[in-house]
Length: 82
Image 1: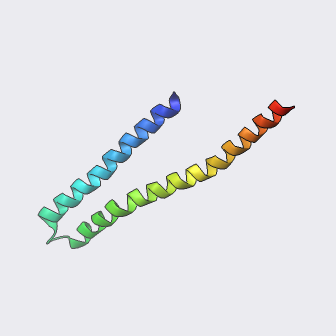
Image 2: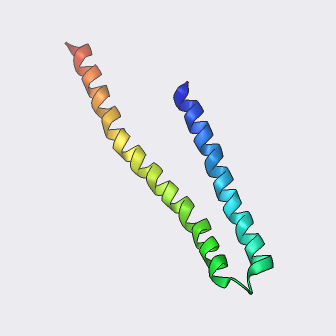
Image 3: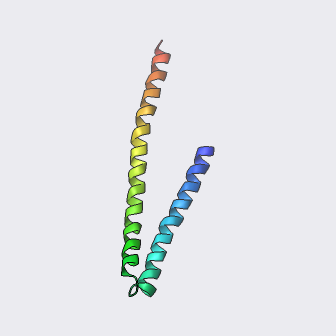
């Protein structure tokens, strides 16, 4: 139960962070693009890069824990066969 609550909270925080990046990018583009073009470009860059980084972290996490789950299932099969 604790893991699903933690995942749900993490997902909500991630969604809020990504949506806020898009909203901030829009606001900067509309109101401040003439004064701070670097800020707008940085905001767009982060709005693209952060989801990619999150995807990479999740892929690595699944890959690392896939092996540990496979080893546990082998141990269970070995014990059942004895």
